Image 1 (cartoon, rainbow, N blue to C red):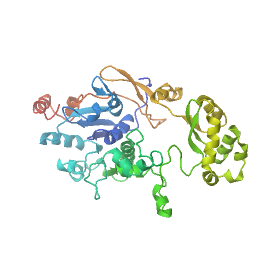
Image 2 (image 1 turned 180 degrees about the vertical axis):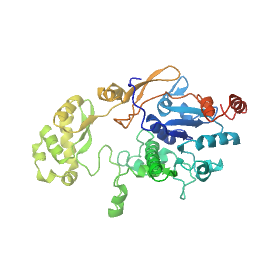
Image 3 (image 1 turned 90 degrees about the vertical axis):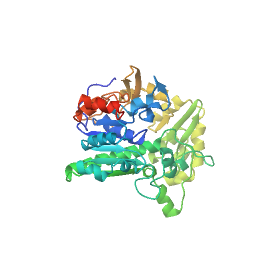
Image 4 (image 1 turned 45 degrees about the vertical axis):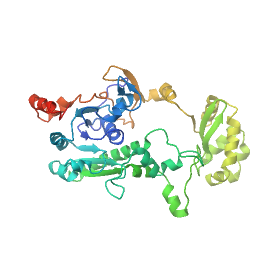
Length: 402
């Protein structure tokens, strides 16, 4: 890795048990782990977390796994067995945080409801991420991030008018839920520290996490009966802000600030528009957005992307081109800010992975360990629980652990 030795993480000393799989729960745990928390990931023996086998594999393991599970320890436990459930309870009894993203009722079926767990660990903070939350008429329905995106209102807006809605290309519903869950964990830990030492449950629903970032979607409907519709690359109600064709590609230009708009019009040789009093504010520009977009593209389409960006940067007009993974990895700014890190997998491969966000100046995050193989830390974690080598061997012989 190309990161220097850093100070201890902001969350050093925090112990987290992760019982989730795939994206939402594990992403939240990854975020905590990046900042120093000890993440003990419980996986089923045999296959482990299905994410290990998602998308592109290197030596049989997903490279996505290398990012999602860095800074974690893997212990393989059969949670369907009574003895495996007992081991999990022992781990949770010593934890600050439990993260799970099973369907509601799963933990209750294993005798791990919060009321039971908090009897032995009253300070436990329990993050529960599910499709629709732990209550309500949809509670028991299966839910994935893509469904949360659809029912949270995002999918309806993603795409071109009068076309079938498309996804944004990543599992944004899961990661939005994970980030809301992480915020909830940190708030609950703060409350526990300053207000009496009690833990609590954090209930995050995928569709609600999506809805929470949907800006003015609901109040516009409430106040005016207006239903926001898909608008392609434009930003409805904000003008001009769109993607514009160039001679060799596309550039995004955000010229919607009043003073920025005037500078943009000067750059494209349209001072007549920049000085038009009807266009001095956003409301006026929205009323004539089609004409403005045509004027901007009439200027951009005869120029190369690099030339457009250079001229706009000199005029302090926000603009950027659409990056691929190759563009990101080769961009010097990303590298200058340690957002592309070199990481060695446990199979010995050197790969580049995204850096850590946010950037804390006093206690920055760091990659302390690469993603574990299944059960890499079973013996170490069970030993920390006080189990002898013989006890661990017996559990392994009975396939309770691996």
